[in-house]
Length: 86
Image (cartoon, rainbow, N blue to C red; front, side):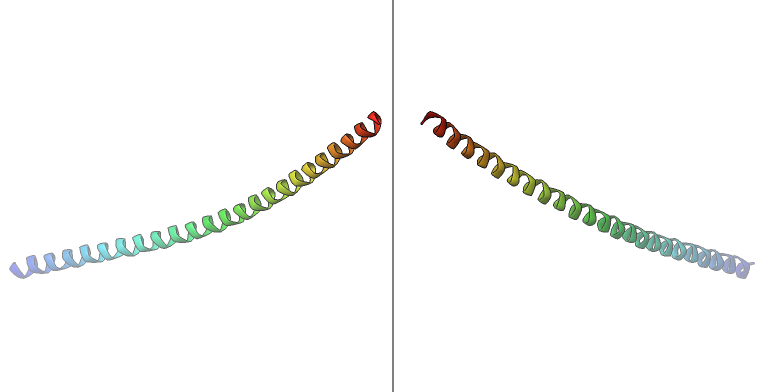
């Protein structure tokens, strides 16, 4: 009887330890999966940031071109007014 109780407790303890080990491996696997998902998200965000930087560079060039064009137009207009006055 005592031997049966001891064996039952032993097997229950082994079962609990095996279950805990399984859960810890599952948790580690979930953490790795989360890390992989985070890596994929970071890669996607880096790509999006690069595209936004390119968009900003394009807008800056367009803005500078428009500014220069506007300055040239004002300069031409000033000279035209001076010529018209003279």
